[in-house]
Image 1: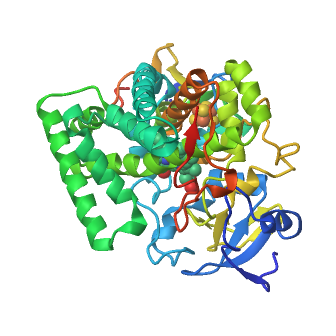
Image 2: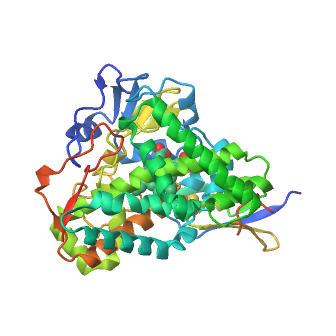
Image 3: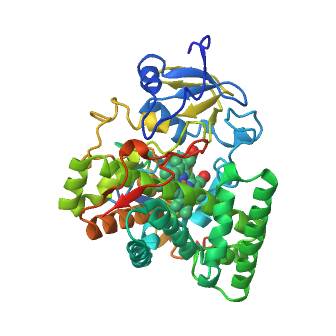
Length: 399
Length: 81
Ligand code: HEM
Ligand code: SF4
């Protein structure tokens, strides 16, 4: 049984750029099941080893649904969660199956041309604006937003308005709960209107497919159609935008890897997996804790039934038990199995789209700007703070 | 006698997401990071159709005894099988 006598307060301390607090690696070696207390909620166990984190993500003995009825360890008064992420199989399976069909790698592949076109247009604009430019606002933020509009089927005329709402909704810190509620309400109303149009005139976009599913399968409600669309927006927007900026930053600060990728563009798909492994996206391991339904034996001891575990995916992705020389960014490595998109029943639904966005963005950047570089010294880059995801607030680049 | 189905996983296409093994642990397990059916010949069970529809790589196929493909479904919507 793990030793619950030392309770650490979590998170461990302020984060800096893309560095990982060494405490995680100390725990990996000495206390793989570490008792932690967060600002809100009950105590939990922090998992840092690859095998343990993967088990907690993929093993049905761990539950997400329990989090809805427990005092979940968390950093904010409110907890994360919603449709899909609040459910365990088999409840989760019904909805996930319907929405997953719009998200197969094959279906997303059909959007590749659009991704390339949108990226080129955004980069044309960036060039027109002159150097230096902020890569976040020029490319990383708009691209995933426009791609998710393509996927869902938001008409062109509404896109600016739509993205304003989503942007306001996502900027958690800047708005009061009432203002956020107001934006979410407007978005939900708008999505309901789009869904209604599709009941009259069917379309083959994601929302059209969900509406068809609803008509053919009366277990899916109109409310669920709206909720599923909103969760896809919420889950996909900021994470993809941040990773495009983070990956560009990682490449620009690893010139040998950048040069390698320039000389071998065929490495791109694997390079994106390695960047997913290497870059710690989340500020902390507070997102979606799992509850053990029965006693579960992990590498560092037993998680007692009914207790929550927090998953340090970023530390797991650097576990030397899993990856050789894990702190080295090595674009030729086989990073398969990395946990950045999660694992198991809740494995990122949007992973094929996120991969498409990121691969397209990086490919175009390297192809169009042979001299791409940071326009300010590395230590002058300002990083997000108080947000769930990490990343530069802005990434000034020159070319 | 209940109907029998055949499950196949294309291990080349499998991305190791773990969706199948977590959703239907009785039917799929990960072996060396990629999925395998626990048994390839199973009694009819809707969950294997659901999982074949959910696989992000469309790596799982289910056929009935007569060789008709039951999943993945080519269209969104409820299963027609
Ligand atoms: C680089 C970008 C992204 C990263 C790093 C990421 C990461 C993740 C992770 C780790 C999970 C699993 C959470 C857990 O089990 O604890 C997840 C789930 C999810 N992601 Fe993503 N994601 C990204 C982009 C997207 C995009 C573009 C979309 C949609 C357009 C999306 C939609 C979702 C949804 C709906 C879920 C919930 C799935 C479920 O509960 O069944 N994600 N994502
Ligand atoms: S759901 Fe598909 S991709 Fe994921 S592990 Fe199973 S077979 Fe592989």
